[in-house]
Image 1 (cartoon, rainbow, N blue to C red):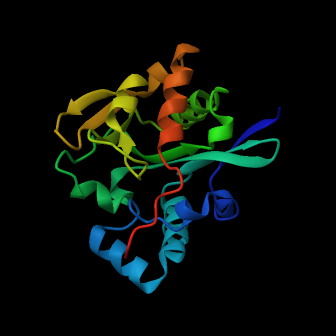
Image 2 (cartoon, one colour):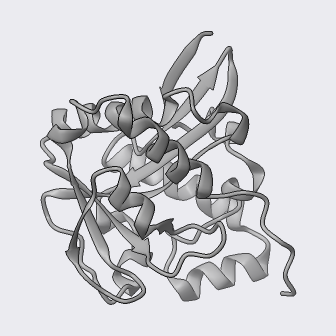
Image 3 (cartoon, one colour):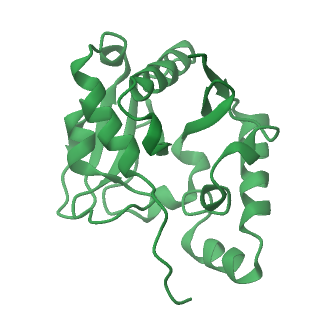
Length: 205
């Protein structure tokens, strides 16, 4: 089985699930995001965001391929590039950390260690660039797949709570610890990444 983890670019953006390509939850502030959806331009806004971050900061994601089939991805960036991060009661993200925005692995490919490899690849990338940690806003009341990762699952893969909150705690993962992860983290990671986004139920606009 051939595995590849490739930096996210505009060229391979079409390999993300369609619902993710059209999601600008993190990339725009709440008002701009709603306006983009109403105008029917979220995919264009997503492309513009990725292009800007690539030019200013560099790689902001990884796409996972198994035998040339795209089966997962992770998106991350410093909080200065993530307008929605300031909308949380537990912001801001620490200055030595990068924000884990969202991640996903296709159900048929969970349980193969891809989650661990994906997060370790991100950790190596960010350590090279001088960052010490990844932080994320967790959803403590998570009930269904959405853009926010479940707080319980983040804790299960080694994140620690740095700012508690009944709904949206901020959690932190020291990057060096990810490089020594063992097999026992795989199951928790697969649960975390597999739970992020399934096909959402249709809801009225």
